Image (cartoon, rainbow, N blue to C red; front, side, top):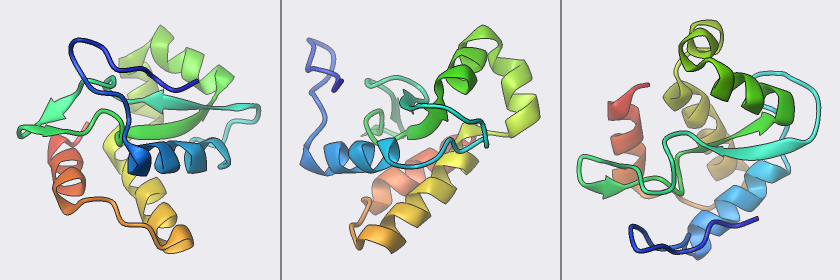
Length: 115
């Protein structure tokens, strides 16, 4: 299900929707088995360095890994590392596989965030 526009943010644009659709076809980025869900790492409205990255800053997680994240963010991060690193490997694979580009401002902002 796609997130809709709210008073706080716009909905995902076509490029962001393509990225999220691609993520749904991938395996869980932490190696867990099961149906993959798109996890918005900091929510759809997340901005860093004045760049709206919320619809880009997503990773594929199985339902169990997604639930585990929401049950204990710090302990989950201790096991799997920062979400920005997981996102970066997914973003590189996306660009290599599809030939699509992720805006440089988005990549720099997410990597600068570093969590």
